[in-house]
Length: 102
Image 1: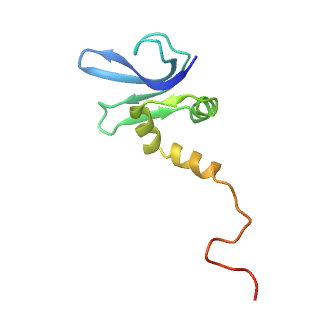
Image 2 (image 1 turned 120 degrees about the vertical axis):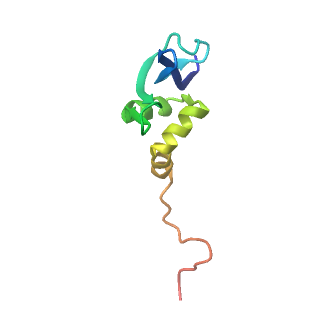
């Protein structure tokens, strides 16, 4: 089973509200999901985004792929940048171009 992090639309006619969910790729957009990970309200004066960061990190760690829209939301919240910096290996070697010694 492959898992995607994607948006599920909720709300009424012309008043959209979206859930960020982890769901099976075969499930419909607004159908069955594994877990609700956050919300996004695009109609507020300033777009309101609430995310369960620890749960999003869990799903990304186990191999879930974010959709393009969710990827942009996570990037805007700074979550993907923080994950990339945390995964950078700490090198004990001198940077290229610098030689150690006399």
